[in-house]
Image 1 (cartoon, rainbow, N blue to C red):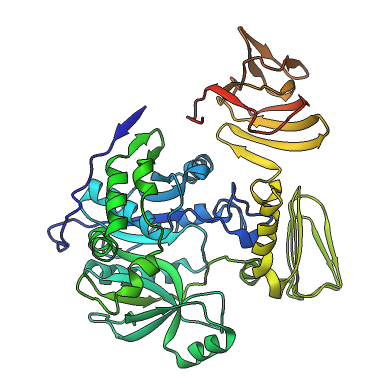
Image 2 (cartoon, rainbow, N blue to C red; image 1 turned 30 degrees about the horizontal axis):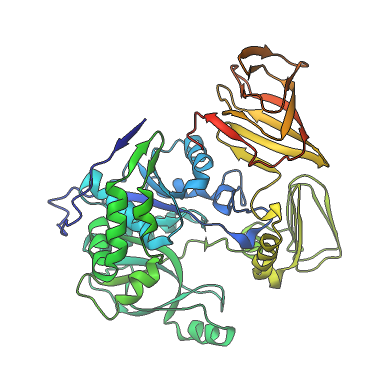
Length: 504
């Protein structure tokens, strides 16, 4: 079932906090891919959805980042999360597990962060007339929440005045992997926050230039975290990038609520130019302040963009020899080594400054100084049509997941786990037959005109070309072993007739 959301008054003008009861609205941009964290991060399961640093994913940590914030304005009960349509089910499930109410807006295609933020601002204006947006990428880490809240509070006060605020990280080293912000004199009404006027953004520098930046004290790292009123952003994007605004306004006005998701009107959103927040607006504020001013607030809260395996090594606790091990890992005479095992034992003997990451279908071994080049390997895998770039061996689906245990000529074996009450689509295959063996739980099987129960240690056979469906009617996970046989075993040999989750 779908429903339209009324288009907002996109010509809203800035009003003071007395006439509009402002709230702080957490806005999470969750459309990244993170190829530098391969083989854990894949196109269909990117880094924000992975538990790289603890027991919850980066996305889930981000949803909690403004809990108990006291910035002088109440925090809205509902998050706004902008996500890629391909990741919608995993994102929705992680939000559900986190217990967070959210409007999950789906981008039909990636158009970078400026259109994503425009859609989020339109969503907030439609619901609340205006609001103070705290825009956070879903794939960052912050270790000191109290200090993060203090910086956000300072940024909120500036944003309430109509400024666009960006959070700058005072650099601790010459870093070539980050963009920089040149800060100016103290911002008006800065108080004790050390908020500065925004002078300009600069690209990622080479090492010698980065060293000069750090020595000058005038350049801070660009964190990618922003704070502003929704109405301020709409005026800025209309002024600087009218084509982006027009496309996004049409896409939002033509969008529909579909279950847990808000779907933008596809053609209108596809017509939007692709651009980042920095290029579209922030870099123009130093020469054109007719719409608003740019302000930089310092952030010193253990921030990381979690952009590489070396960054993860820097964040996590280390042993006496500066090693970090996650999973089934042993170190013997090793130093400054990062090892992450998803299953098999990794034994690091005499290693130095290495990264070793093991998954079910790929192993990465890299010098820590070369981890930025992992994305080149992913590019090569793509050009060779290797499946390891897009998916893990274990693939998440809205009904559960499957793990491709073994494959060979004319056969494939999968372990399938179906959540309680969930069911796969009603489907058929042109090129393969399937055998299902129930290992745990109870299965309700549709096979042609038949519907029957299959219990533990029982099996069912689905002939080639026969319509079928697998369901879990029980209260515990259903686990089956599926043996496929046929001339072609690809996932695109699925003809769906009916699907609870709206997939085609």
